[in-house]
Length: 186
Image (cartoon, rainbow, N blue to C red; front, side, top):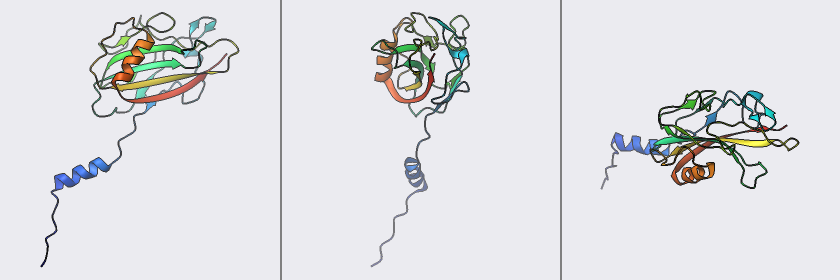
């Protein structure tokens, strides 16, 4: 007795091969600095004893994972001597098809963000980007820049929401994150 070998239709075979292929990594880059490199003065805060340019860095990221409905960008200093870190930039409700932000996009006086995007309050107490400015003499602090891929169309938060409130909502809606960590000390 001879048994016929089942032939898989081409569509099923292709689907199986696609599922086995690894997904492309979700990555974040900046032409202003690389991982673990020093942050340039143009991106440092102007105030609190610092005299930098306070310009938000240019950022670009790769294709977010399937199911991404919106994006957010944060800059956070976990080394700030506050007991809770320091939020330097909080941007949410970016369109899912965004693939970056230009240098200076964090200046609320010069709108450069996509329509509908919200820049929330930083720990400086203002909206928009606030660059690094650790205490004089501290070891260089880490500044964690993160792009968040979210499973929601938008976060229902006001523009003056705190970084902690936005962070809570980001974690609840997260599909994936891509980070870039740089350093700054004085």
